[in-house]
Amino acid sequence: MKMTFRWFGEKDDCIPLWQIRQIPGVTGVVGALYDVPVGEVWPIEKIAHLKRTVESAGLELEVIESVNIHEDIKLGLPSRDRYIENYRETLRRLARAGVRVVCYNFMPIFDWFRTDLARELPDGSNALFYDAGMACSLTPQQVVESVAGKSNGFTLPGWEPERLATLEKLFAQYKGVGVDDLFANLKYFIDAVIPVCEEFDIRMAIHPDDPPWSIFGLPRIVTDEANLARLLALNPSTYHGLTLCTGCLGANPSNDLPAMIRRFGGQGRIHFAHTRNIKRFPNGDFTEVSHLSCDGSIDLYEVMKAYHDIGFKGYMRPDHGRMIWGEKGRPGYGLYDRALGISYINGLWEAIGQSVTRDGASKRSF
Image (cartoon, rainbow, N blue to C red; front, top):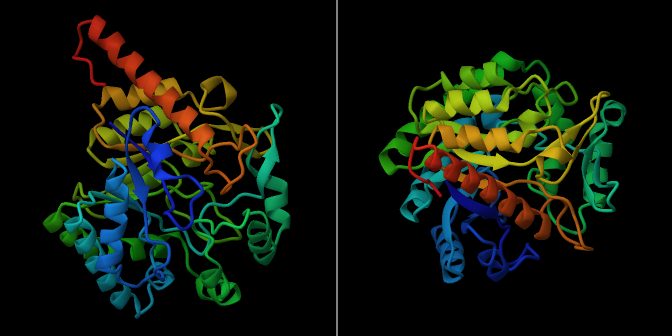
C-alpha cells in the first residue's frame, strides 16, 4: 500500500506540501490541473510544473484525481470523439511524467452531493452532511447556489461554476438517458482509452457515485457490487479498474465493503482506495465522521483486513475529513482530521500485518 494525500495545488490549497510531507507514512500527493477546461488536452508544461513542485517537497506524483470526463462523452453525443482523443493524449502526457493511475467519475452533471457542507457534530467539529428529506425538496439550482455559498471561497471538485452555468441545458440533454445508455457510453469511452493505457502503463480507476443512488432523476451506475461487476465486464483489461471509496459505497447499507474489496481487489481491479467513515441514520441521512470505526457505520478494521488479505499494493488516501481544532479551509479537505485518519489507517495496517506475521502466515507487509 502507498499512502497519499489529496492536494489542490499551490494556488488553490491552504495546506502547504511541507506539512503533508510530515504526516507519517505519506509518500505522495494526489493532484490535478484545475485550470484546464474539461475536455481539453492538459499542457505538457503545466504537468511538468506540478510534478517538479511535488517532487521538490520530497513527495511523489503518481495519481491524478481527476481528469474529468466531458459531458458530451457521458451523453454519447457525436462530439465525444474529439474529447476522447483529447483524453487519450492527456493520458500519454501524464504517463510520460510518471503518473500511474487516473481517478475519474462518470456521474451525470453533478459530482458528489451534500445538503450541508458544515454540519456541526456533537463534539463541536463540523462535516459534510446529507439530509435525505432536504435532498428531495431542493431544486438543482438551489443546490448549486448553496454549495457555492458555503465553499469558504474555494472551488470544489465537481462543482465548477463554468460547467454548472448551463444547468438547464444539461438537464434537457439528459432527458431520456437511462442506466443502459450510460453504461453503453462508458463502454465506448473505456474501449477507446484502454489501448493507450496498456501501451503507456497507466491505469484508469472509476470512482463510485456519491451518494450511490439517483439524484434529481439522473441515472447513476457506479453504485453497488452488481454494477461494479457490470462495468468491469465492459472491458477485460486490468487497466480498467476501480477507485473503491468506502464512504460513497458505504452510504448504502446493503454494500458489503470487505467482500467487494476481496472480490474486485482479488481480480487486480482496485487501483486506488479512498478510505473513510460515515455515520448512517435510519431515515436515509448520513454524515462524515472521524475514521475511527466506533464513530461511524463502517468497520475500518474489516476494510483494512480485506485489503491486507488480498495483498493490496495500490494507492490509498483518506477521503473527506471533519473540520477540527478551529481549522478553516476547503470543506471536507482540512489537514488535521485527514492526517489523523492516515495515522489510524496506518495503525490498523501495521497491526494487521504484525498479527499475521506472529501467526506465521505471511511476512510483515508494512
